[in-house]
Image 1 (tube, one colour):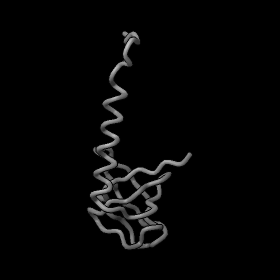
Image 2 (tube, one colour):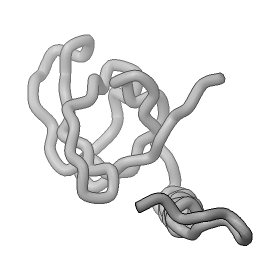
Image 3 (tube, one colour):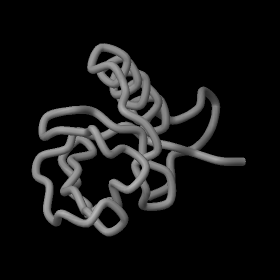
Length: 88
């Protein structure tokens, strides 16, 4: 199974198209990402990132929708299942 996560490009470094890097914010976690596959990306764009590579630019509304879904999943994961003891 493959997983790609959206993030917002907050800065871009480098001129070489193959080694250009971006600092990408994933909801508060900032990572360095290779931008070779998205040559037209600009700061504040949202990108879909898979194993450290931005693979496409995504619509900001779609990225926000994914963030909301992830937030819901996180909240549900924090809630104990009915009838199940909560570990202490």
